[in-house]
Amino acid sequence: MAKARASTSGISKKAKAAKPRIRPVRWLLRWLWRAVFVAASVVVLLVLLYKVVNPPTTIYMVQEGQRLGASVDHTWVDADRIAPVMLRSVVAAEDANFCTHWGFDMDAIRDAIEEGGTRGASTISQQVVKNTFLWHGRNYTRKAMEALITPVMEALWSKRRIVEVYLNVAEFDEGVFGVHAAADHYFGVTPDQLSATQAARLAAILPDPKDRSASQPTRFVQRRANSIRDGAATIQRDGRAACFEAD
Image 1 (cartoon, rainbow, N blue to C red):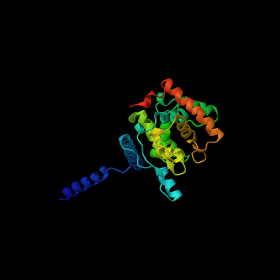
Image 2: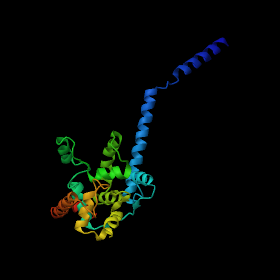
Image 3: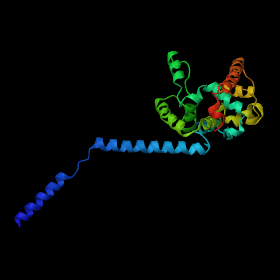
């Protein structure tokens, strides 16, 4: 009987000794990788969703609506109902090498570094990611997320879709978002009625929409619009507009 008790006690001690210990670092790393996997999956699913579903709004639109105390002016319009010269104008103004890069214009980045960071190097693709999926502001977290999402979007979306979304979520004036609202706001026309001059002026105000006007342009905006108009014609001639002219 005593031997049986001793044997049972020995087994019990061995069982306790064999019980696995929780390693906090390993447990934390395991859950961290799971969280990263879930976050990446959500991003991919959202990018896939917006490939076929038009974004109803953006974080920045919501913030501006709250700041202004009113709903923003925004109506979605498909690329087929936008004057082709508008698509070419915005690409000529913001990202002339749009058809040849995969989301990042390395030549523009090198030029920006050489000039000491005084010029921007963001592509239309990067701006779409920022405007559609993220928030405005200068911080490393947003830039890191932008850098991760941009190639995913480039791989899943057509170039035409990227330009289409860009033109529909870009800010053109205080509370005015998208080319549909902008065309009506500045010129009283629909996007398919935009002339080459009007399209160039809209593209010219995009870097600073709150302080520039397409209908009452300053000399600077006029000069920039003239340059954009020439650039739009150039990328049409040399084939740099081919990737977004049609799916």
